[in-house]
Length: 404
Image (cartoon, rainbow, N blue to C red; front, side, top):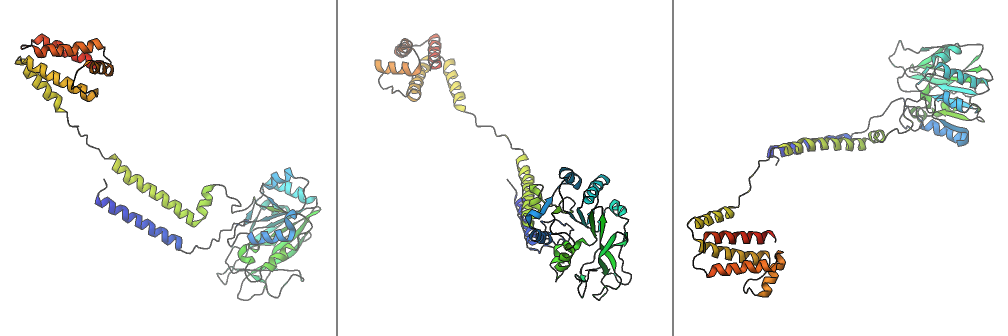
């Protein structure tokens, strides 16, 4: 049994856990600024909005998801054509993968990469170097972006009101590369005075490569702020709409699909806290219930049946005093009680039918049954009974009961 102190402790612990769970569940969920760039994520840096714009613009037949690494995908689909579309915080191709991608681009296809960190071997191949925008006068690092094409340029550049890392292309191959977009840090005025390159196009064989250093442009937050979506749409105007778009899901910081039931459980704050509460409850049960079960239980000896010992004592006293006649009378009464209660046969009259019933229910021969009752009758008529006759009677009764 739990003590009163233990019960109070359990109640207090349960109350505290319940209160913490309630406070956590009702607290406003903080904004998740993780740079996921996954098409299914609706967080600020997910690409749910931009992916669905592409889906509506290019239709499902023209937009294809690629979950494999580029090397494996192009190896299995060497005849496919279109634009391989990469958007993420970081894109890093190994040498064999880049070689296969560039061979595919040379055949007249397009490689589009929007990333803050672009694979170094790709930049080296295109003779491109990068640097980072640093604010010397202000701690703010909010970028402004715009396209250089007069038909796509607007009166004021697009402003991203979040401090972020801002790479740009410091050196390019001016003979083969074309500048498409520029950037600058926000300086209290929406005007780009010292533009830095952040969007370029470069021919490669019969195809072309588009490099963009501001992937936030495809994030949900940028797309849904003011009219920023126009900038992203104009970015895509450099992609041939008649060709297939191969949307990469492999190079993504965020998960694009659920890999386990536990991941799904922990992604939902309410299911997560229900799961934690269940674990804590089970631990409390194990701790307190385990203690109760481990207590030693004293062994209580059952009360002994003293009737048999008393009977033996009385019978020994009668036997020692040679009261054999009285022993026979007691034996007779006890045997008749045995027949009445155990064999369920009335013993008021011991006629032939009664003896047959006793014989049948006790599994004894009728002759042995009659012999026992006859011996009872003989001893009851005698005035003096010997010790040997008492022993013989006892043996006959024992043999009779053993067969029952």
